[in-house]
Length: 139
Image (cartoon, rainbow, N blue to C red):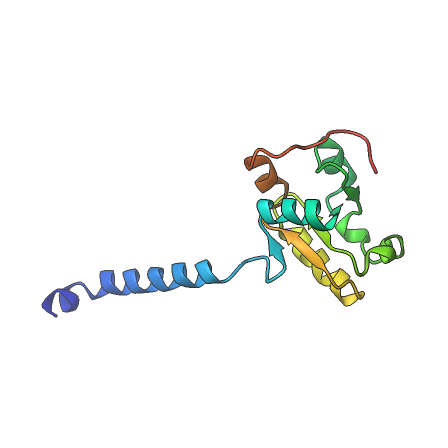
């Protein structure tokens, strides 16, 4: 007890950082529809999930997931009609780090898409996992 009284600041810092670590471990930043690269690969292979890359066209051309379609995040709503046939199919949204695709997921959910997922960590995580990227050609 004496130790705690003499080092109250250090104890407080340890408790706060431990609590933050626990909260971040249980809470997924991308929400409940966030997928790891392994989960995304399984969804693509088992359920023929469609991949939509929400980065800008120049980012897409520099390297994207094979068989992905480029629909920039800023144009999701205006191009939603192109994606209507995917409303009940599994869809994985991808961006560079996973941040833009979280917002795009929310937009598509509001438009009635029922199986929308976000690739947690985006292209960066895909590349770090050693998974293939395709360069060039816009789709």
